[in-house]
Structure formats: C-alpha cells, structure tokens
Length: 357
Image (tube, rainbow, N blue to C red; front, side, top):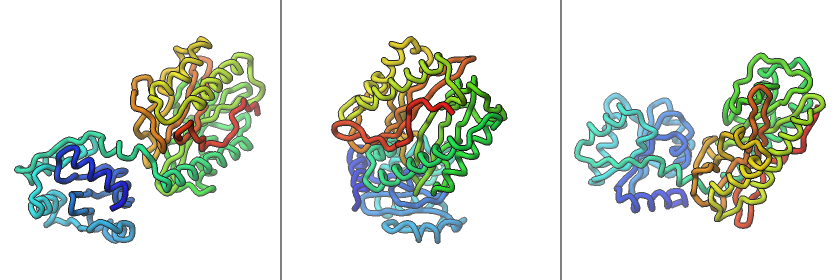
C-alpha cells in the first residue's frame, strides 16, 4: 500500500467510516492515477475499485494498476455497483465528497443504498494532498520552469500597439512550445489602468508607452500546475510606478524570508502585508498573499489573514502580494515556493527587479 493510500486508510479510521466514494477528479487522479473525466472510486479497507463507462475503460486499464476496473452500463449503474460492493463487504457507513457531487447524484446513491449511513467529508480528501511528495514536486518545478521560459519569450515580443489578447496568446504559445500540456488557468495579460484589476480578462486594449504590464500565467506538466506573475513597464517608469513596484517587491521579499515550516499561514501573509501598510498602500492590497498549488491551481492551505493552519515541509505556496490603485494601475509579483524546515525553496527563477522595456 502506497503512502497516499495509507493516509486515506487513516482517515477512514479517524472518521469511523467503512469506505469512501471519491468523486472529485483531482482526488481520483491523486489516489488512482486515472486522468479521465468520468469516474468514481470506491475504496474500503479491502477493496479499491474504479468505476467508469465504456469511453474510458481501456484508458483506465492503461493508467491504473492497483484498482479493479469496473465498466458501468445501463444494467449496472454507478449506484448499483456501489450497492453491490457495500453489500458484499457489509458496509455500514460510506464517506462521500458532498462539495464535489451535485445534489441529484447524492440523492441517487442514497436511494440505491437506503440502509447505509452517508458521512459528508467536506474537503478532508483535499487536505491529504497538502504535502507534496518528491514526484509531485518534480512536476511542479518543471511546470514553473516552463513559465520562466515563457516570460523570457514575452519580454522579446512586447511592443507598443500589441493588444492584451495578443500578449496572452504569445505567452500561451510559448508554454506549449516548451512542453506544457495545458494551462493552469486563463492567462492574464493586461495593460495600463486595467492592471488595477487583479483578475482582469485580456481584451483589445493596446500597449502604450508608460503602461504597467501585468502577466499572470501558469501551465500544466504531467497534471501539475505552475503559477507566476510579473509586472513590467513599457518604456520609462514614473516615480509613482517605481514606488509602487518597489513596495510590492519589498513585501514579497519579506514574506519569502519569513516563510518556513511551523509558521502559521496568517503570519506569512502578515509579513508581506505589514510592508505594504507601512508604505501607505494597505487599502490597495485586497487579496491574500497566496495559495497552495498542485493538481489544481488553488489548493489548500491559503496564505491569508484568516488562515491559522501551520505550514509544513513539502507544502507548495504562491507568494503574490499586490497593490491595485483604481484609475492608475497595479503591480503583482508572484513566485511559487516549496516550504522547507528552515525556510522555503523558490521554484520561480525569473528576475524580479523592475524591467523597463
């Protein structure tokens, strides 16, 4: 039994459940290795079964080694197969991912297994993914390196008159060229006053001299995500632009110096937030400092003022302070780090000094 399955068995013991029904696609991949879109996992102390339909059974047999593969059909649905398994094992209580299943599906399982107790697991399975193993960290590091290549590429392509959509496309094409299998999220590339919107969608605005350029992007490598943000200025930066940029950079460096195993997430956030508040920009930093990254782009835990969870070795966190001033513009600088015993390892290698193109 591998380490991931051992942690899952410990959860079954803690929650006093006999089996778990896994529905969320990232958790399915984490525990079984299956990358298809449609499946359920039934996992008990004695059985590991992946249920999917005819579109994916050959696929599943190629990817999944330690699970029984069962093909559902009109005669035997997911609910019926689960009933059969529960009956064979005399299961009394099944844990399920209530946050990942639609109400009608939950009701269908309950109707087919009326004598079984169903325990809501909320996001307890996601928490088992918090600490990344060596193979996961290798994939995340490779994905981040692809992002570094894309940043080097876009610096050569940015020019006055280019649209935000064109800039985003250049970044995405570069990531694909360097080995990405997909995007972690929709690429952000915005100019000028629109950089004051942290999650602005690239549009038809054209790059002009003196504009801030914020680029937030990431890719997927072997299923694992990357995430980075860089801000540059097209042409010579104004005094105000330099002040805002240097404030964000100081805040990020302060957080990077502070983060280590044993630190609370909220304290990591405070290390950066205090720098921005001291500079008088506190009201313009509205989001948390960062979030974990793995199979999904926004994983647990988050570096936020309200999160008191303690960081542990092997957690991956973005460190992305920002200042966003309406009708002027914004700056965000984001790296992806691995928490270590005495600090953190920065996976993002792109330069962070203010670049004026």
